[in-house]
Length: 359
Image (cartoon, one colour):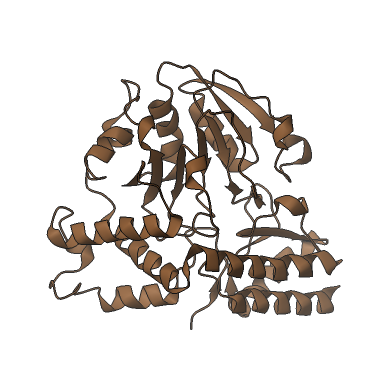
């Protein structure tokens, strides 16, 4: 029986994608091979990778002046790759701190440059996005880095900051493809695939071409975006099966009506859950309403002694991975693209019943 999987990542995948992968596991399109067995330089896999990139460009409306890279190492590796590739002759970068993933990015960047934390939400326990007018940007910064959706804290940017011409770099790991974005407003977007794109192992980087070719001499070849771009993301063996599954997800998204249609579904799903939380006196969501994530919804029971009973009951009702991150506690429902509205409705019904029994 398929359950409703609310995991923050690796996360739920569309059932249709899993079925297609299962049907093609032993023989992809009459090749006699599984995609897992293919040479990354063979014509079969090259066609898979090319189609995945084409479909992604269509979904996100990526301009021709941007390179799409299918890499490895997750967003954590890109936290190092970003300063290594973008600093050039500069020595400082601006970072906005909105939570746990922002902090990880800042920690990594400090190994390579002076980091100016231009704004932080730490004063209110990372429950909001600092207003743009309160940012203290450095005019000499090589770039400005933001995490546009904090998976752990449940905070999301619903606007694109003006950085006065300095390249804007965004970690979009947990909400890419969930909403329309204006790629041209960013210098770089990046993210791990294991939340809204596909399985773990694949990392996506979309980088404006004029930002290539400025890597520091110490940059490892595998993290050098120019070298990877020049080799069509195949400087070394890419995560072939993860790219294949991502390609199936891209096809599924197109069949759903594309990113614009998916955004409307995500707005509706999130509204259902937040509306219930707001009217309940039993549960609470701490995030400023204007900055709430559509993808990751943290919530707490007013009586934390009931947490284990809540999670046990949820599992018995076919709803898994609702435990909040250890750094914040409570609960977290990740409702990515592949989570059907029926899953959100089932969760709300369970929450109502739990409240009736324990409130």
